[in-house]
Structures are given as C-alpha cells and as structure tokens.
Length: 468
Image 1: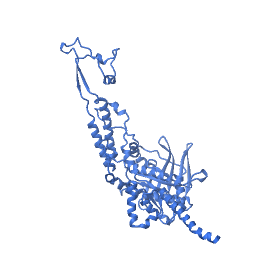
Image 2: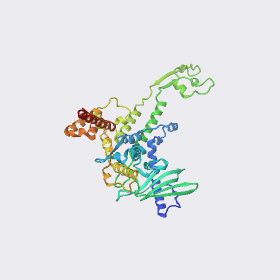
Image 3: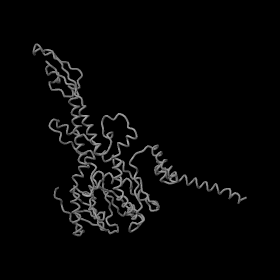
Image 4: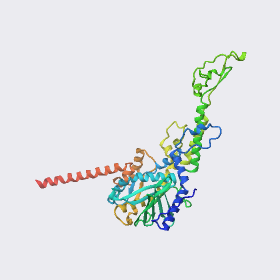
C-alpha cells in the first residue's frame, strides 16, 4: 500500500486528527480489493492470462461477462424490505410514512443491501436535516465501504466512530464527516484551507453497519464476490475470447489449392487482397498454371470441414455450473445450453433452497441495523433526545424470499386460516392469503365503509319512526 499523505486539520484536536488518519489508513487498506470487486460487478475486469496461442488483438475486443453481478443481484432481489411492523403500536402516528417518503428509504436501504453484498459491509447514517434548506427533518443515507469506514466495538455491539468521505480531488480527500460519540465534525477543504463545522447531539455514533456473513474473526463480513467467483469469471472470459478467435479462424472450411499460382489472391494492381475478401469469396476463377509442372497445370481443390465450436461451449457450460454452485443460484441462471424445458414449481423451489436460506440469513443479520437506524430516524423526526423503550418492538418486515404463485400462496394461507379462523379478520390473515400491502389496505378500508353503511341502514328505521 502506498504511503498516505497525513491529514492535519487545524480545527481538530490531536486525538481527532489521529482518529481521522487511522480511519483513512483503514479505508485505503481495503480500497484495492473493494475496487477490484466493484470492477467485477460492473463488468470492467479485463481479460488476463490468455497465453501465447491467442493473437494479441483479441485481448482488446472488450468482451464482458455479468456473472459476478448476477451472483450479487440474484441474492439481493430475494432480500426485499416491504416495510416495518409494530405490534400494538401505530407507526403512522409516529410519522413513518413521512420518513420513508422523504428519504426514499426503501430504495436507500436497497442500495445499502447491494453494497453490503458487494463489499461485505455498508453503512446507514442518521443526520438531522436542515429544514430551512427544505431538507427532511430526519435524514437516513447509505454509504459503501469505498467511502466509509469505522471501528467496531465488540463489547457494546456498536461503532466507536465512523469516517464518511464526501469529496475527493484526484484521489486526495477534500471533504469528510467524522462521527464520534455525541459529536459530528463536518470538514471541508475550500480555498486552500480546512473548515470545520462541529455539532453535538445525544445519538452517540449515529451510524449502523449492514454486514453480510460476519464472523468472529471478521466482524465486517465477506463479499459475495469471492475468490472462487472471480476465478471462475476470469476463466469464462478467457473461454469467450477463445470462442471469438475460433469463430474468426476455424469457422470457415479449409481449402488447399494444389497447383495454383497466387494471382487469385491479388487485386488488379498486384496488391494482396484482404483476408475477409478471400474467406467470403463465393467463387474463385483459378487460371491454369501452364508454366508449372506438367502434372499440376490445373489446380486441385481439397476441402476440410470447419472445426466445431462445441468444445468451447461445453467448457463455458461447465464454468457456468461452477458459478451457479458458488453463488447458490440454479444452473438455469447461468447455463448456455441444456435448458430447453421449463422446470416444475417443486423443482424450481428445490433448486433455489440454498439461495432462500442464504437470503433469510442475510436479512436476519441486517435486521438489527435497519431497526436501529429507522427508530433513531423516527426519534430525530419527532424531536426526541433518545429512542423510547417501547419502540423496541418496531421491526423490519422482509418479503419472503421464496417466490410462490398467487394460487399456491392463497391455498397455503387458506389452510392456516382454517386452523385459526379468527386470523381471517386480521391483516396477518390477509397477508397469508397472498394479498400485498395495497390490497390489504383497500380491503380493510372497503370493509370499514361497508360496516359504516350497515350502521346507518340499521339506524334509519328508528329515525323514521321518531320523525313520524
């Protein structure tokens, strides 16, 4: 790792400057691997290790492969946040819809989810909004591990600090926010000078890490783009390049012209024709070679069939299945051939059993961080100095990772409601029947209106009798 330029901000204390430089060094130590995985995800990883048998021009044709991204997104799309629940409480009265709408919160958490799978960890940060500048009262924003890092306290199960990079100039940090216990430092380098905006608050370090696959020896998690995934994608890219070369060189039949001269390969001015002109020519007029060997005055054409690309495709298909195993996706998500018929619903679910369990494990790991961040955001929005204890029951509601047809979901729900009939009158019962959030709200609203009309109809005869 190259030597980093020390940051020394006059408006910060010695301890604060040391913390900044420690976190900058920590961020830089993971930068190369994080950028490498980002390159794999974005399809910008160049082909390497082709060997000497491949012409050099084939390394520059810009082939890309999206398998690594599919491994990340395939799991991310199974980890969808539908909203939040609070048994016995009223989230609407707390202003949760306002918090969600003003922050595009579900989309923001979705970004943090993808970055967590990509780099192993991402961060949700709470800040107080500037209402005079038309900002929401409470802000929640996501930061990836490329621009944020902090120190995790294993005993408190929370961050001791967090550094969030806000601006760079040619890889030189020109703006950052340092979150400490009860203090937020907003630092910018403007006009050749550092400026510091210091604000105190009661929220300790208002940030939560969203960690994927944490371990005791690696609290900040692991990337979904593992070394086996990167290795398999590299091998697949090399196979694609060899296939491209094969199509250019071996896809055309080989012709041997015995006894011919080279005039058929030349232009009228004597220059040699381009390769594509010779390959794509449909008819060659081959003159007799009267000045040559008496036994070979007329050209004899020998043809050999073109080589099949089947070995390249078989290799690619084998690599696709290896990638499917590494990412817990089905063969159909990667395979190039051998997938002619659709699978049954039972086979579909069985093939994705590992992915479903992985999604459930990921959402379990993220739930605490999401809950802490949202409850903190609600407290800021409502002007509280701390999170009320009764809010501990607020929890994120994740969409089930197993995709079921409407009929299958309704059938399963009906069987459960049959065992507990009173569930049919609750939101939970309607969820079990497969209704989405909007349908549940509309159904309950229609039921309430119908009940109101029934009450009015029941009271009307009594009113008429009194009037008469």
